[in-house]
Length: 525
Image (cartoon, rainbow, N blue to C red; front, top):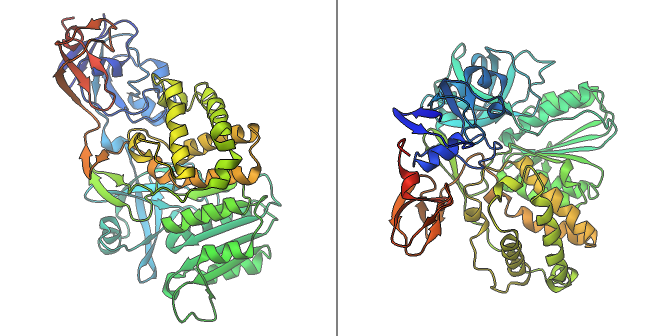
């Protein structure tokens, strides 16, 4: 029988049991989410012993070489000593080569990474400040054209990291960052495809990189970039973009100011309003959106309504807080607290197109049949009855579309609070739903209307680590164990033996999994 050493304690492993299951059975609190090796939240470090090869699948070569592994995938083959991950291993260092101010409140940094990186223009890095706080900044540089990584930083009121960058960070200083990552970048292939880029503020940074990379790759289709700000002072890099337009006739920059007394050099409009006023049919376009969260959300809905294919809409950064969200710093990591979205206005025409719910039921059965066969989506629903999921989703959509109060389950934020879901995974889910709607015979205009409704809830679902559940304005714990006396008999979630009513058990706060007295013992079982 193999054993695990962790935090000075020793735990025995049953045959076929993963390290995470061992931790759960013994009441050891470690972070985890999907339990199937997708999210990497449970990452741990093996200090001694052999790590099975499959327990490192999906990790970078650097992490693998240091002994990192995923406990949810690791069935020990021999005794292992495990320690928590070293925070520094998640970050690398870069030298600040140049720091300059493009405007009084926008700073440009040129960074020289101390190790070789592979990335795309438009991706982002997470910079860690002197107090451990992290923020995401997108890259304006093109790796094969620029030696230095380039980011643009806007000074934000009460922004700890931006104030540190503006006031304390100096040239030749070292800073720590994680990444690059993100899926908002130019992909060569369809060189004649029209491209629309819409941004506000320093959201210009990644889009400039995308423009540079597209033009350098020989893109021949028209490229329209709309850069917006409330004040003229927020519009920057005009000379650079004008020069690019002079050298490349297919590039068309538009500078928008939405405040009062707009100079003739600018277009008096919000950037997204101007963009979608000029381009009403986006069915064959590629679209990039970056900047203020409410603008991005509105622009995405406008793009969908203009016929854009959802898979051709790229948003940066993928982990973003929506308008009105609060950012707290917990354990040196940003946690986003989301205000729950209000129910939209009922859409009785869409409900009628869904045959008063009959077609919706048919689509949901088809959808969840495919979800349970999907290797990316199924792990989030393992152990949950498919019929129960269909019923809950049906009642939720019934209430959304008709306004009738028939849904009494948790709203999307709390229902998904523990799930680590990226924009890419959310897009994958939405593509599957779209295919089921079309296969069910729903007309395309109603497919897009239903999709637009579902997009309202994206900010409540997409995140890079679990959120705490909020009930009646109070945070509820999502990890750890408590103990209680059972009122009714049940089965142990570890050994599957019956637990009689009146027995004392341990249960997991988030999952509700129950462990009997024998399974609660440490290493003597």
